[in-house]
Amino acid sequence: MKKTIRKAFKFQLKATPAVSQQLANFAGGSRFVWNKGLALNLDRLEQKAPLLWYQELNFWATLWK
Image 1: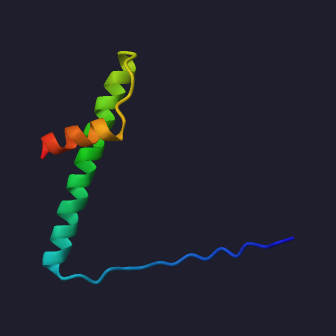
Image 2 (image 1 turned 90 degrees about the vertical axis):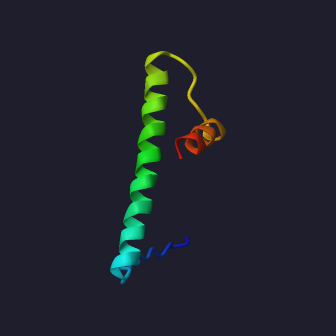
């Protein structure tokens, strides 16, 4: 019988304050788009409409920019 070895690695970025700010902005923007898409699909579920898939959500994400 074959045994699987599982390993975990933990990393920490040591960034300058300017880079840290850029990373925070990027994460905040990504979270905003995720929450918008989630809200859109949850509303569609309540209305018993089909969910939006990647291509449709990608279209909306470009409009939200």
